[in-house]
Image: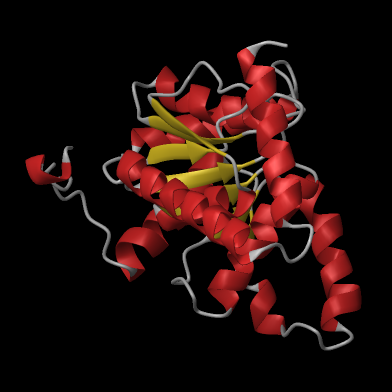
Length: 248
């Protein structure tokens, strides 16, 4: 077994143990301390990367797929207007977004995750960090971003969309845009929301307006700039200075 395989196995075992129910208080304390330091490591690593736009998407679409090409163009357009492109750091559409940013000399970062099936960071990252816990990783993917773009994906992408849109719906974060691309992939899912969730009153009509279904990267960037810069006052200010007493 190579060292990476051993790390993946250890991470999976630790996560299963944490989520398997109550444990002795000392064990729970050790888990809590490890999670705390994972947060601190993420804060230190990502403090100077922004402002970001996070692009969610499947690891399963490869180069040559139309979704890969669309996501690469999305990453390119975001970088051209000054955003750092943040992804989960893996292959597929995450790679495509990071690659698009690097195509035009933009900034590209990734928040990778240790999995039993190893997910290596893609080759188009200026900066990346490896997390053991999904929930810590998801905080980082949200914390530094002024907008979110969801490309086609599976359960992982849906999980990221639902958690982020719930934070927006409940005003835990500002109403930063959540853009779904392209419409042909997401419209059937949104129709199911209308036909079932909205019809049964589990969401309100205004909740669906938080999701912007678009097809054009240019249109998506225009919407992001309108909301992030127009409504929330994001500007091209100088980045925060590094401080020697924080060992930065």
